[in-house]
Amino acid sequence: MVINFKLITEVGEFISDEMRVTNEQYQNLLEMSKTFYNGGYDMWIPSGFLVASPEIIKKSILIIQIVNQDG
Image (cartoon, rainbow, N blue to C red):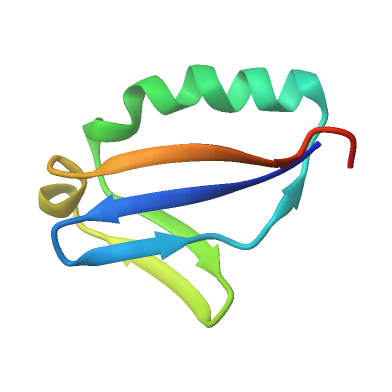
């Protein structure tokens, strides 16, 4: 499947590059996302690389979007 991350913060919304993952990798990402609020966060975005501080992350929402289930 093809997924991306959408980070919604008080300073804006950011969408990661698309990634091709297996179902097992997707399930692991879902499990790891449960500790998302415990620190800072970084991800590749189409225009470069995003790094967010723990203070921003504590007030943010992380969405793992499935772009294409078959892809």
